[in-house]
Image 1 (cartoon, one colour):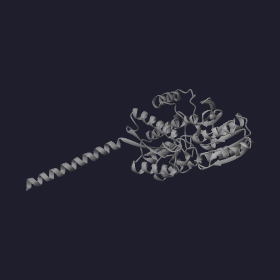
Image 2 (cartoon, rainbow, N blue to C red; image 1 turned 180 degrees about the vertical axis):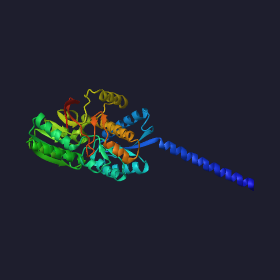
Image 3 (cartoon, one colour; image 1 turned 90 degrees about the horizontal axis):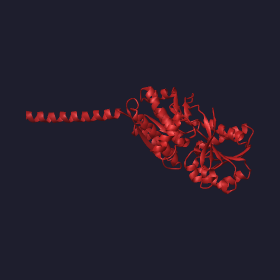
Image 4 (cartoon, helix red, strand yellow; image 1 turned 120 degrees about the vertical axis):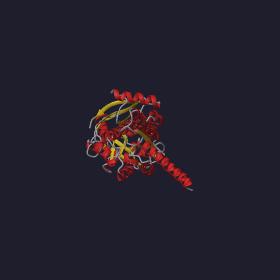
Length: 381
């Protein structure tokens, strides 16, 4: 009986030791990984933005891991699709934070999704750095929320100044998606500045999100004979707007925001998007060595030149990883504090945050000419 009891005890001890080793191994493996969430619209109304954003983040993570990781740990990027839908974005954020245990989130390029996602991140103390959500309200959510892009108050002002002073237009019609916080905010900032300059907004027209045709709105705008049309929407809508407007006989210039920067703009709009201008965060014509090195590497890896989404998501991810390294910790509060004081030299220029965690940086004006993006000018803040 004693021998049998000893055998049972030995077996029990063996199992305990084995289980302990397994858990220790898992803990060691887990502690050697830093999980970062990426939320992007891989499907829905802006899929090219999502693909580019994912690629930019992926490139930054791969480069970091090739250099030995961050804090001596491997960075693991976990991607979630927000479908350019606020509810989907919130669900993605909750899953990344509560189930995947990410220590921070980046991406979330579109303001309509970034706003509700920011609220989840603020409540949970999860640092968020949005790549391209330009609506000023995004960072107003709280002190865990940052962005890598300039905001719409600056972008709208730049667009209005360019239309008035460079294009010499004094009468402009505006057509925007009233269900999109990005488009609505940018339209309002443009209107405010253009009127302040002494210009006239001939028509300030809004259309519902998901509109299948824009002809009825364009007829109202064109009846007032504008010298230019400001369209602060995403490339998917504005490419179709340009086609329909050209079909109605309008040959004047369009002016847009950074939501125009997609390789699909010309694929959808064709020649109709020639003689258009938009505000952007960088130009592929920038001669700086780091810019051209990035463009060359990205193009070789993904088969096409990077758009603004790829560039800003690359910068956002690198900025986040630098903040973690500087903090010497993955603790959310420490990463947040590190981010507030960071000085990051990126593809889109120097990024330092103001008191509202918005970067102060330059904008560029791009012209679409013969299906190509052509650099026009740089506007400093």
